[in-house]
Image (cartoon, rainbow, N blue to C red; front, side, top):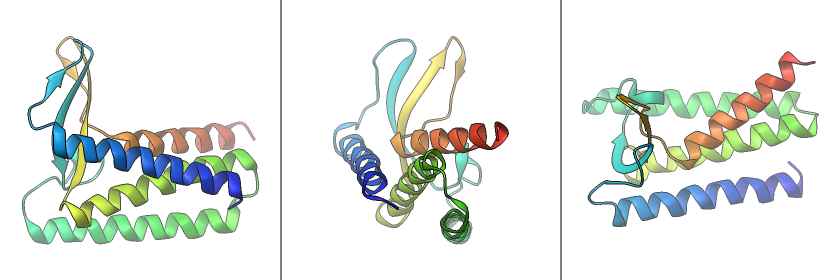
Length: 148
């Protein structure tokens, strides 16, 4: 990872940690910014979109082991394969977001999610900056691979 990717990594990580700190300490009661955007503090003990989000401790720690194993495999895979600058940027977003979410799992026993977009009766699952960074990184790498 070069110095620009290292800086990007820490920018994503710090932005996510700051917004999660704000949500954890100041978002006791959710509020609507508009009919489209609201903030509501939740703790996701599962994986993406709340899958496996249950109070059972055994499932929680199993999910944690799975997530950590997945991110270690991802880091190794991209360390071996990445050569293009844009692929490295995508991987940097994914790794920074993943590490921040893994920190939450140990600090709060669940990932802090608080951003919610809604249109009419539809509402997306709550997410955070790390989730957005992961999604952006995946989309960037997917786009690059599809257009090779």
